[in-house]
Length: 193
Image: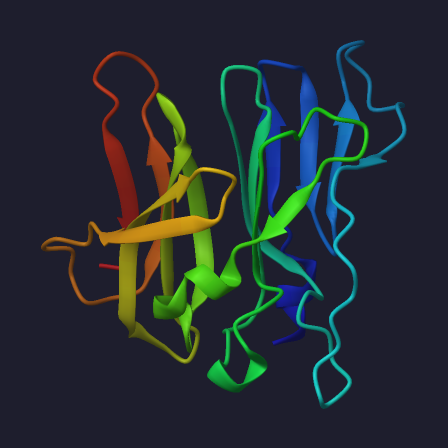
């Protein structure tokens, strides 16, 4: 539906007084003066990845997450499912120097083979460990095929493991994953049921 084009993820970073916006790339704006008059600054520089049909793999950001003590870690995923014959590339990215002038994003799509035929819809960093990102992905054509997962990134992001944390969640479309701040660190996952 055309209306989805206008649904872009946005995040208010209360630690650094910034607004983050995902569109074709990830952008940020400093709002520490209480106004929105600062310029938008690009924080991702992912090259366009054309598919065989001329569309882009990375046309629109579907979700992103910011994490770490200084919000120096980033996770970003693009709209649309990953197809096996697209070589599992150009859909999911991880960054460990988000506060740099030109952050380096690593394409981690190839490590996430369970993403075949799935799209990432929501992501949140583990507040205690920026090497862990909790996501949910599902088949964009049927919400019944979905999973909540913990992604663990290792070393120089040369290895990623996935752990299914869906447990007894109902077989229905999921919405958003959030982790409650504070000592208890409860995770909440919104569903359609």
